Image (cartoon, rainbow, N blue to C red):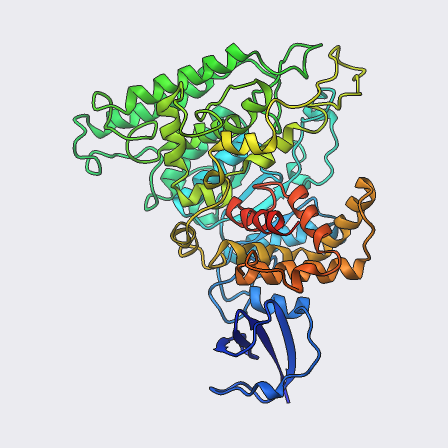
Length: 548
């Protein structure tokens, strides 16, 4: 007889059949988060609880994988090896050790031959502003694309040149290239009459690449849109509106302060030798924010294009795509470098801000699912990027290359940074409808942030367990066996998948040995958007906060 898996959950019993179908029935007991393996006939419309064994356990990884990646369902998380029957985007991380034991060049060729989708080569941590710009454009346009995650170059502690740093974790053909790179499909090349691979690693080249996306995908939302019909109240011709978008785009480079180049900490620190770990002066940041406020004021009034929160009116354009990665980081990181300097309006959004149009822009961007559900980071991660060497040495460190003293603490705690960033709602706490709007157009995405987080854990559990053990040693954290950690991580994935209301009561599942270690580790090590989108990460952080 085949095995059927029964799950006890919130007074309901769910049965996972051989076809991965799920049916839930009310029962009279309450046993949150525990499953029973039952040797029974294939499930029909009735179920007898007397067939259950007395052995109760957390789901195995195989069962969890069946739940997160049902083979016969359109609602699947992106897989490293999708079936050939679907044009599902691939995502591979070139730097991961488990890939280095295989021929990555062959895998890359297989990607190109498998689905004929374009390929985005981007910096793997989500730090690089130019990578984020192109990534965001693809998401807003709703273009299906493969992703190859590659190590950044040129972010070394001592300012080494790009040619001096190691190329470890980079494909051979990208060793001499900066990121991002974008490879159009054969069909796209024909439609654009352009080269096969394009660089977006500078302001100028990234703008040219955004324009090519408009040409190659004319049926997607245009970044330089002819909005005359869409915004009928605008008295200006479409060509003039396009010029206004270009003006806002070009203003980016003119507004940038002189700062140390870095994919990880863009336009934050001094460029002058001897002061390269010092944050830019307060007045420099205020000058940038003043300019942004003026730009938004210019085109957000009826005298400009039309009233609207974005740089050029009521809809997102190339201007917003160009500015968003930097302004997002500034919202979280500037308050960490200068006391009471809040681009988004203070550590409480009810406080009157010096830059009201900028605040309105932030709020409008947070309503765009294509941006917030995957590309956008969270405050905790942007603060964490700063609060490590080399940018913020520990209080007892004096670096031998730079004549600067110890930094001490950042100016904003994690809680203050979250508030400055816009609160939980700006850090992934979104409505079901917001997520549904994102997922419905992407059948490989789970139907809730919790399920998406669970799928990510299930897909990467071996690497997570290995890193937890390393982290325990580094942090001198409480000792825990690999078996206990494995059990606890399965419990976390199980809770996340079902979006359980885990705050109602203490459960046996959440008191598993190692659960506190796993949740503390996940909260500490999550980096967004490197590991997952902010909403999925919020589900994990919420669980960690409630249970540790």
